[in-house]
Length: 315
Image (cartoon, rainbow, N blue to C red; front, side, top):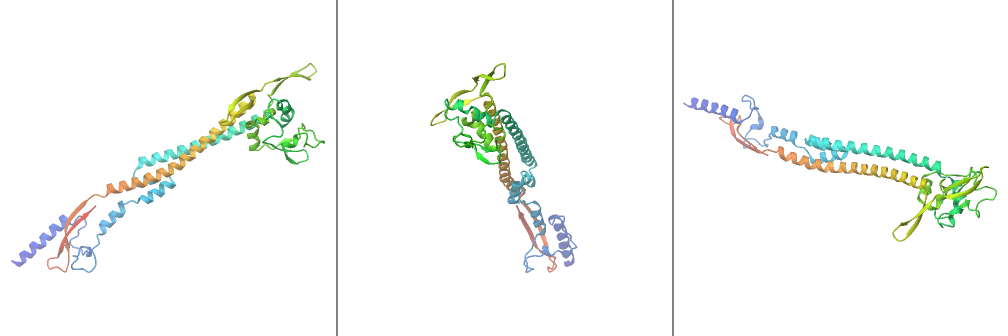
C-alpha cells in the first residue's frame, strides 16, 4: 500500500512539474535553483528571468546620448524605426540646405566683388568728390570712415591722406599706382556709406567734343530721404551703387539662410535626444507585461522530492 502511494506521489510530481515547470524543466537533472528556501542557506536566483530583463530593458539615457550625437540613432535603439528615419532625413536635408546656401553665398560674394572692381575706383572717388561735397556734406575724402591705401613706395596709409592738406606733394592723388586694400571692410564701405558714392563710374555722363575733350558733364545720381529712427538721412544713389547693394543683400540673405540651417541642425540634435529618451522609456513600459507562473520546487533532501510550491509574478 505504501509503495502504491509513493508511486502515485512520484507520478503526481512528474506530471505537475511538466505542466507548471515550463519547457526548461528536466525531471532527471539536479537543478540547485529549484531548492526550497527552507532547505538552503542561499537565496534562489531565477536566472531565466534575469536574462529576459537584460534582453528587453533599454535605457533612456543611452538613447538620449545616441541621438544627441546622431539624430535618429536613439529612436532606432528604442525600436521606433519610422521616427528614426524622419530625424535622419531632417538632418540630411538641413546639411544639404546649409551646403547649398553656403555655396550660393560664396558665389554671390565673388559676383558683387567683381562688379565693384569693374565700376568703383579710388581715382574716380578722388576726382569727383569735390563736385558732390558742396551739395552733400557727407561726400568727402576725410570723413567718418576711410579706406586703407597703398602708395607707390609701398607705404600703407588711410585714405584721409589723399586730401590735399595731407597728401605728399610729390605724388599725384590720381596716380593709378595708388590702390586700395580690397578687404571685406573695403567692399562694405564703398557700397554702404555716402562718403564713397563719388567712386562709382556712373555718377556723371560726360559729353565730349570732336577732339575727345570733355565739354560737359550730366549728373546721373539722385537722392532720397531715409528715416533712420531719430533723424532723416539723405541718401545719394547711382544705378551701379543700387545694383551693388542689391547684390550684397542677396549675399547676406544666402548666408542668413545658411545660419538658419545650422540652427535647425542643432535643434534637431537636441529634440531628437529628448524624444529618444521619452520614446525609450515609453517602449520599456510597454514591454513590461505582467506574467504569473506556478510550479513545484524539486529538492533531493525531501522524502518525496518536493521542496515546495513556486509562485512567481513578473512585470
